[in-house]
Amino acid sequence: MTQTTAVPTERGGPDETITFWLAEFDDALRAGDSDRAAQLFEPDGYWRDFVAFTWNLKTLEGREQIRRMLDSQLVAVSPSDWSLDEPASASDGVVEAWVSFETVAGRGWAHLRLRDGRAWTLLTTMQELRGHEEKRRRTREQGVEHVIRRGRKTWLERKRERQETLGYTEQPYTVIIGGGQGGIGLAARLKRLGVPTLVIEKNERAGDSWRKRYKSLHLHDPVWYDHLPYIPFPDDWPVFPSKDKVGDWLEHYTAIMELDYWSGTQCLNADFDDQSGTWRVEVDRRGERVELRPTQLVFALGVSGYPNIPHVEGAESFAGEQWHSSEFTGEGDVEGKRAVVIGSNNSAHDICAALWDHGAQVTMVQRSSTHIARSDSLMSLALGPLYSEEALEAGVTTEKADMLFASWPYRLLPGVQIPVYEQMAEKDAEFYGRLRDAGFELDFGEDGSGLFLKYLRRGSGYYIDVGASQLVIDGEVALARGQVTRIHPDGVELDDGTILPADLIVYATGYGSMNQWLTDLVSQDVADRVGKVWGYGSDTTRDPGPWEGELRNMWKPTNVDQLWIHGGNLHQSRHYSKYLALQIKARMEGVPTPVYEVQQTHHTC
Image (cartoon, rainbow, N blue to C red; front, side, top):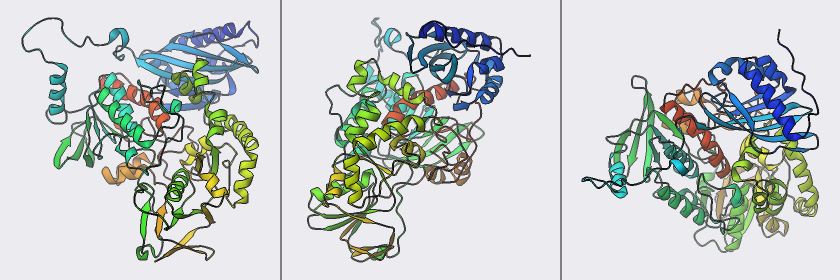
C-alpha cells in the first residue's frame, strides 16, 4: 500500500519549503513510487513537461494523469539531483522557485509553484543532452590548428567545400522547408548541436518574407519579446523595428550563424522512403532539380497555410485591382482611389492606414467582432513584467521570461490573463467607448482573456493598435459591418444590400491551416494522419474540442514519424526551437526517446 506523504503547510522560509518538497519528490521518484510523487501535487495540480520526461510537449492535469505519466516514463527517465537554482520567493500564499534537475538523457530546468506545501504548477524542460552539449564558452572550437602542416584548410575553404557538397554528395540529417524566422532560428540551434541541416527558402534572400509585405509594416510586439536564439537585437534598436530592418537582421543572422541556406529554392514534393528510412525531397534550386534525402523533415512555413481568399460571386467581373493582404505592398498610386479592405485584424488596420496615408478613400469591412489592445497598454500591463527594460533590470532575462510565460498551463492561462484585460478595459475605457460610438464591434475574447488566448486558440481576431484605430474613430477610415455577398465591377455588396464603391479591394481575410502544406507537398494521407495544426481544444470559435492542452502538432512528435512542424511568432520560434532541436538531436545520436501520448489526430476547424 502506498503511503500518502503529509506535506507541512509551513516549514521555515521559502527556501526551506521548496527544499523539503524537492527532497520528498526526489525520494519518491528514486523509489519508483508514482503515487507518492503525485500526492505531492494538489489534487488538481498541473505538471507541464517539455521533452524532459515525456519526449513530448505535454501537460498533465491532476494527480491521476501525473501518476499515469510517471508509471510510463519513470524507469526510462531516471530523474535525480533536484536542487534549488536560486533563492525562492513567496507572495500571496504561493512559493515560487527555479529548480535544476537531471535525467539519464540530460539536464533540466524547472519552475515550481507551491501552495500550502503542495505543487500547484510544475514546468520541467530539457535544456541539454548529456554528452551532446552545445559547443560554447569553454567548450567552443579552437578555430585553427596551431600546428604548421601542408594542406591545412582555412575557414573560407571549409565553408565553400561544405556549400558544394551538402545536398549533393553529402546529405543533411534534417531539411527545414521555410527560411523565415522560424526556420532560421531552428537551424541555428541545430547547427550548435552539430546536426547537419539544410534550410530551403523560395525567396531570393533571407528576410524577404518580411521585405515583401506592405511597406508601412513594423513589429507589433516589442523588441524584447522578439529576439532570435543566441543573438539578441542590439540594445539601441527601436522598440518596434520596421519590416525591412527585421528582414536585414534575418539575412545577417543567417550569415553570422553560418547556416546552410538555399535561397531561391522551392520544395516541389516530398515522400517517405520506408526502405531507407529517409525522406525524398525534390526541390527546384534556381532551375536545377535536386533530390535531398534527409532523415528528419521540418515544415517551418509560418503560423498558417495559404492565403485565405474567399470566393465571392462576381469577383472575376471587378474592374479594379484585387489583392490578398499577403501580396499587398502599398506601392503604386492610390491617391483618390476608393479602397475597400475586407477584414478588421492586424493586417487590415495596417493596410487601411497605409492606403489612407497615400490619399485613398478607405472603407474597412468588419465581418465579426475584433479584440483591440492599445500597444502602450499591452506593453505596460501584459508584456512589460516579462519583456521590457524594467524586467531585465529586475533580473528577468529572456530565458526566464520565456519559462515564466510557459509555466502557466493553458487551462490556467485565461484566469491569469483576464485580470490584465479587465485593467486594460478600465484604463482605456474612453478609447473603447469612442470606438464603439464609431460602430466598431469589440470583444475581449469569448471569456475576456484577451489577445494572447485568441492568438493561441485561432491565430486571428485581434489588432494591436499602433494608430489606425484613431482613423476609424475620426471617420478618416470609413467603417462598414457585415458579410460580403457579391462583387460588382465597381463595388462590394454586403449582406444588408449596401454597396461600397471600390476601385481597389484588399482581402485581409487571413490564412488557412498549416495542414494544407502537407496535402500539397507530401500527400493527403500524410495530412490526414497529422491532422489539425494549431489550437489546443479550448472549445471556442475556430478551436473546438476535444481538449489537448498544448498546441496541436507544434514543435513535438506528430502522428507521422520524422515529420515535424515549427512556427509561430518570433517569441515562440525562439523558445520552442530549443525543444524541437533537442528532440531531433537525440534521434540523430540514437538516444532513446520514449514519447508519452502523442496527440490524437483531430481535423475539425
